[in-house]
Image (cartoon, rainbow, N blue to C red):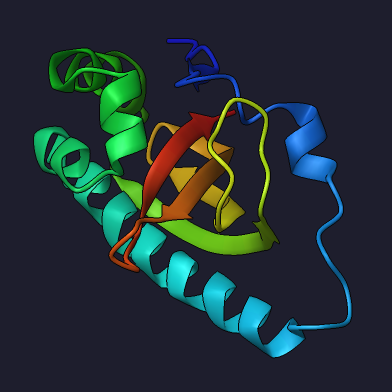
Length: 148
């Protein structure tokens, strides 16, 4: 069975430009590293929900921005169609995490765009791109998800 690339474009802000955009250098490097670490940790927890097939819970734990872009039912349907056939998680490693304050189609604020090198039972090599944003209450929550 050939598995097609998975693409859920919540608002199109995971464009190639966003993935290669430069983020501020120098000032705030420690703060940037802390934000990237916090967002990456939150992303791994969120991805674990998806790995366990708890798609509804992953939607409920997503950002307000995410929830306003895709309904719970549409998210579950997309995951059933595109993620579930990939099978169980075999491995996932952080490839990159970039802090950004502006992304196309998303409100300005603190965002971290992460890429994970991932292997699933039915797809040995995949790249998951996950974008997390910092909510008003300071929590990092998912704002976008893409598997290639």
